[in-house]
Length: 186
Image 1 (cartoon, rainbow, N blue to C red):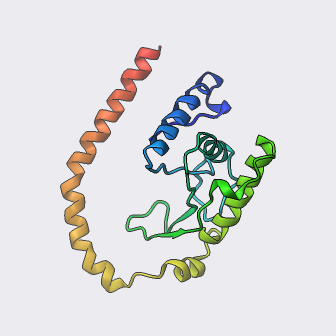
Image 2 (cartoon, rainbow, N blue to C red):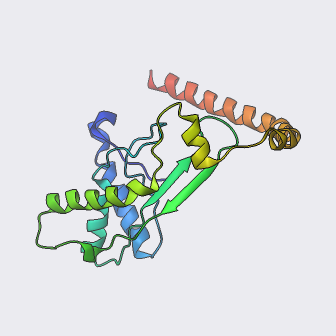
């Protein structure tokens, strides 16, 4: 996981973004992939949100360095944001490559065009469901029968009981760490 900071998270953190971009470029040089959430903000809703410019900037930085980067749009759709037993549906789109863009345009124009193309390719991959529309949710993700729920209840309970001590321990350690950080800041 590589952090990306916005102005609202502190202007002093913005320089860290250069380190993140450089790390991504090194990963691309090795012909490896990076998962980027181009919306830049996680909101629990079934809609494609406006895209930020970071993905475009990173892609053009790679292409300017002669890295044959391919951007693969992917729609990741969850049946629920907070419930256990999620169904996840992933749709993949068509690659975006350097050949798609005119090199004579300005950086700003290229970024805007990149985001338009990315949005156009992501839109059909992302489910658009209004809050509370259970009919559409069931249509997209299907339903789980009561028999299946009952059949899975016992293994789920056993799993929860087995993992609960580990979860409580980890939660306690994190809380202790946060308390120590708050004390050190004061």
